[in-house]
Length: 126
Image (cartoon, rainbow, N blue to C red):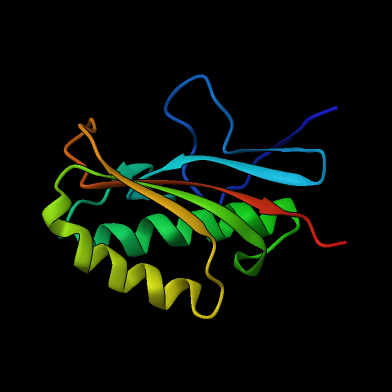
């Protein structure tokens, strides 16, 4: 049976979804954006800032689920401007280090004037 993951260290969902779900030994993290978990408000800035905040929110959710960034197997990155790819990618590369999960990056329209949204799937440690 799927288990809902909830942590105060990441933003409270702004809709009818969970921060993450654990099922079948995997953690499915919902799309996260640049929201400050302490205030629950968007913390907009350049794509570098927004990517850092978004990835830190994901890290907190993964830790609450009992896994780590090193166990991420798939990432989806959504950018409002693909011209921001290089700056997002630099933050992403530093965040994941030697871990290189499969990734899809697409340009899309995002709400709330955010520049980036990221979701991921991670394995639970055995």
